[in-house]
Length: 85
Image (cartoon, rainbow, N blue to C red; front, top):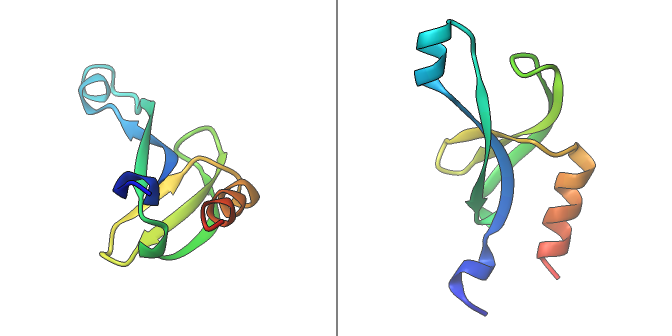
């Protein structure tokens, strides 16, 4: 197993500061983050009110970082469980 195989890829949204300063409107673009599943401290379902009330998962890492993964709660748990196999 390669070192990078230990990571899972989660869809995230990145706030576009340059465009927001020009237009005055918050804009996001799709991206991803790769994390080590065993470094996840806890997670919970959320609704991102800043982003068209999209269902997502709020993920808290052991290092204190927090981010939203743009999956349903059940998709997120399925991804974690499949990764452990």
